[in-house]
Image 1 (tube, protein in one colour):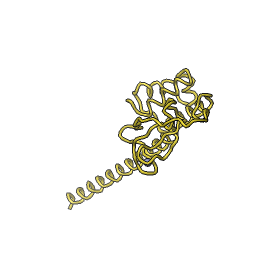
Image 2 (spheres, helix red, strand yellow):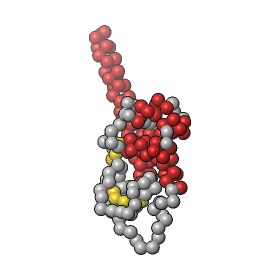
Image 3 (cartoon, helix red, strand yellow):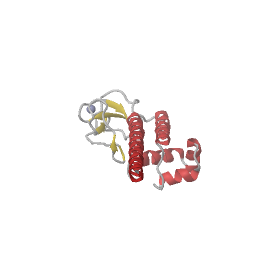
Image 4 (spheres, protein in one colour):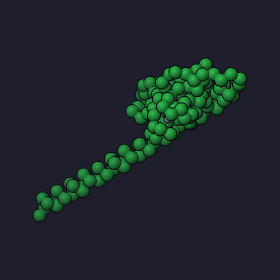
Length: 169
Ligand SMILES: [Zn+2]
């Protein structure tokens, strides 16, 4: 699975839930399946990924040390350039299409509930929402690829039929 948002989200959910067994039952999959996702022997479905994003967000929202807590002086945004990918698919700012983000609060760690800012236009997005949007993009991409594959196969079958007809006549 490599270093991408699938692997990182799964690792974070495991850490929060404490055991692979209870996380597997939460996702309604056999524990062996979850372990295959963990060590990269199988690809986690996007649906399981978005469930995990929601799970981690809900857990973190209950954490007292979250973003919204400290008011008062405005803390600075970080200077990092974060990117979020699943394979070759990269999360983009919905406003300008840029792929680099930074935390709106440099003093807090990156959480699923963190507010991120687009490095180009400054549009804010919640980390978890950005990841779910990325998951949905992956579903759309797979659907298009499957359609194209079917179209190619249909074209090949048609070509073979024409060829056979030519051989008969
Ligand atoms: Zn932007």
